[in-house]
Length: 324
Image (cartoon, rainbow, N blue to C red):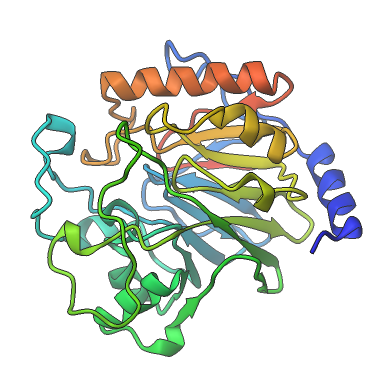
């Protein structure tokens, strides 16, 4: 239900948000946000009261709110499936790399899952088991969590519309859509309505319906996260985030993707493109970008500038702490 008081507060926070520097796609980043600080790849402990956002490639994020940590789609193992070599193998075994994950994930209290394709969900069960973090996601994410041996009490199934209160921050869940490929379809569609056998290969992880999330930090920014390049615009009305983490379009199958998204989100102060890097290469800067993905990134930035000229675009680098 539309809440006028909530909408006014969102607008106030958005208008009061600090801007980030504009970028040049020739060098990806031609500046840094006004209060960005580069950190060690280990993530490090946040000072009390600080709020930082670190990109972990694809649509993955680590958010530190004081001494509390929220993760979004944390995919760190980043192994080769042949996708970026033109030799995609849907039988590729699921692989978790603790030597990569453990130095980056010292803690987490919530893991927000947009959908359950391997490049979003692969590492979630391991991280949840290691940290005790709650996994918030679709019913498919719930059943896949059970299949990996996570207890039901550690899994929070959501549908969209929920506003979850964690004290220092709230998480609003938005029912969303997965992107379409050039054939107006997608890889591995489907859901899990009961506990399946433990997944063994990437095709065992279906899309499983798609969500978006908005985190509103008490006394801080409201930040919108999406993990795929489509959306139901009616579900975004009134969110008005300060910052929007926007997925690069997978194809041209979705009509007027950027103009509709910018209008639905009420033209955020800062737009951060995500899901444009080669997510089968290590998390080292500068991010590896395939030529066609660089074109998609350039197209996204140009479209944002045209549809929302007052929004500032920040192309992120890995492991960099951004403060909005």
